[in-house]
Length: 139
Image (cartoon, rainbow, N blue to C red):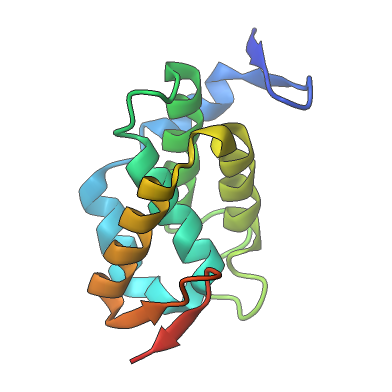
């Protein structure tokens, strides 16, 4: 049974997302980030933090919060379609799901959400995020 259609008019099954939604927890998200952190690259790390802060945003619909939670749940998975420990390819499947979630909520990404995401990354990893891009500069 299809619950809705995404922005590309392709059906999204609730049952597909549900298994990943159940994996999400804030504690597990930050545990995963502390392990893989900068291995993700600045852009993917930025996407994760944007999605984290959008979960608390009242302007984001319940439908989109479900997609966000599923994407973050998939990211937390220790073993997914392409294992995270594989050099270069390890996070490509995570990147695809996170990018899909970002594309669904892009209109809700405000300068304040971007600022909070960058500040959290800087605090967690002791880096400086470039103010004009999502690039990280090691302190």
